[in-house]
Length: 87
Image (cartoon, rainbow, N blue to C red; front, side, top):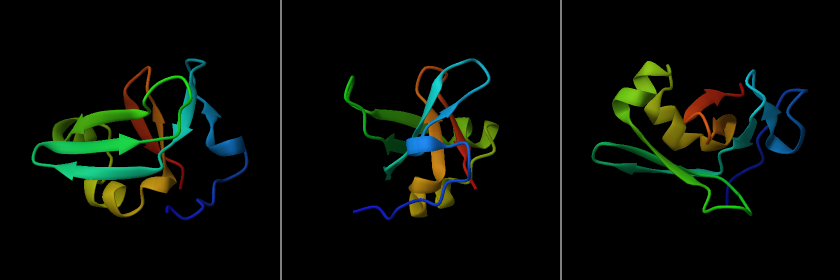
């Protein structure tokens, strides 16, 4: 079971409104594959998972090892296929 993330103010319920008006979701867990990382988040409207190649993570300046070890400190915008750190 993931531990509770310590989100800064402005991140109510693990969500943040991004600059394009979309809702960012708190990542709950992650899994390593040969060519990237799959992330999971709680979502009632869909399956709440997305896959990022290592190249995509590098372009977004996301540390892959940190994403695997501490997924709960990251937020995802599923519509824009982006991840960012909440730390």
